[in-house]
Length: 358
Image (tube, rainbow, N blue to C red; front, side):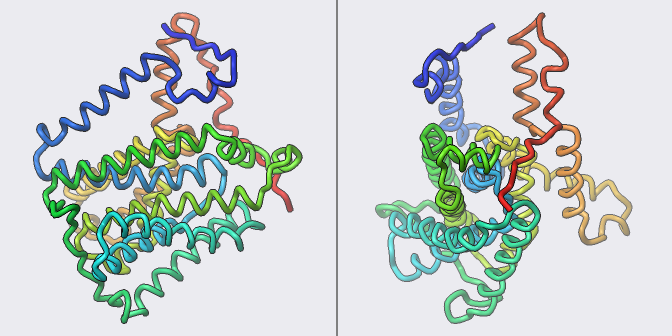
């Protein structure tokens, strides 16, 4: 049993709360390094997808989980990163330059959508971001001279210092490395005054403003950083697909990203990892379910979208804290046994009702 009593601000912002956490993170790093030795090519490819979706999930988590801004348009930022990466590499730029440029352009788009959306909240903000995603998809389909239109683009082979990353093992290490760097950047952001301001805005905008938090500045920053992280994921996503087209970045992808943060656990970076694993595994489970259904029912369109929606609704009703919330409850139960109170998390179903500025 371990109790961590925080008696100073330094303890509160410490990256690792105790030595045990540092040990288990070390074990995780060793497991990630050893994964290519244990997994076959298919599972290694799926692991790369998990790392890519973790990066995108961290971006959306900063916006929705920590700042309280709902977004249904993150597929647009993923598309921006993918197309920027492909076009710049076609122009001859090396990957080490095209990758940050992909994140930078996606961040600029985040500012472009963040500024008009400052006066929106809740369902209105979700609709605005959804409309933005449709606009980006239409632009990609119509701007044939740059994006190839509906025919799409072939993604150039990824090489760094003459080493080809077409091999699954090399590409897996690249995705995991970028995911770790993004995770560390997000952790440090949340430990800073910026992260505290985001959380204050999420809990109560009026209270945050009364404490001197500049709502417009921090909301726009959240959109920009979230979009930039998602753009980095989009660049890696393009190399994983090897071929991109506007149809690859439709509303279903935005729903998958929303499912990722909701099921993983809103307000937790660990939840982004759990959610990414769930989003990658769920289509496999749906395929197995379709194989067990009658032929006419299995061939119906929209089954995948319907199951995604059902999963989101069930988690919001019965486990609002997501997979990470369930894991935290289990861990808390054993830590507090035998004095654990069953009603400890009884209030979790009551969401914090932010006092939105009208």
